[in-house]
Figure 1 (tube, rainbow, N blue to C red):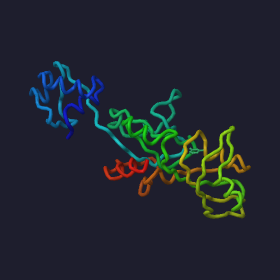
Figure 2 (spheres, protein in one colour; figure 1 turned 135 degrees about the vertical axis):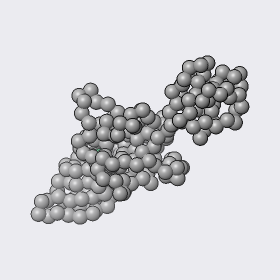
Figure 3 (cartoon, protein in one colour; figure 1 turned 120 degrees about the vertical axis):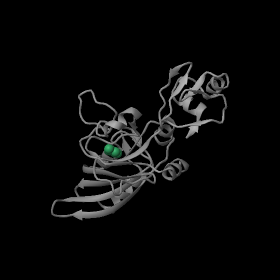
Figure 4 (cartoon, rainbow, N blue to C red; figure 1 turned 90 degrees about the horizontal axis):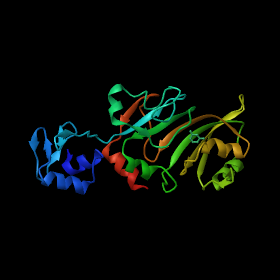
Length: 239
Ligand code: URA
């Protein structure tokens, strides 16, 4: 349940202040009843009209998906390939969800989806310091010294990456590869691949295992769940 003026404003037809005016002047109905009190709370299942026209009201949604590889991180694709939105069940289409940042086509793991622009803006972009943790399968065995170089920042396309954390997870000497973890607070295009590329390592597999306080624990690839109100609060508080 949410205040009627907030629901009206969210539909995009006017500001919250203007919505208050519409309510007090008797131009708003909820389920055929004229509502003139500002404290009135409605739900997203109610039929709300303004000047007799039903308005499109939309509930905010916050999902975490375990993104599979070979799915595009966008709401639609001009070549009709699978996207993180197209793989959601039909009943989610109406929410007009979009991903909070992007994972590459061949990257899997934690991806948030929302239809709340404010939430998106707080978590994406240069101002956001949210930690993103990745497991990286590298071609070759990286040394501790090289990991320290990555942590201090490397130059990718003339830009020096911010300090970050890394850890060595395991080595596969037979296949000459290793698994490392990296925690970054930025989100530049192909950032992790380019950071390791800058010191001569190719990223063979990339998995995001954490976005802020959110993991994909318990979710199979392609599965998703709603974030809890507590998770949303913590996620936004840290920024
Ligand atoms: N860094 C990358 O290189 N790719 C991703 O998908 C995410 C971070």
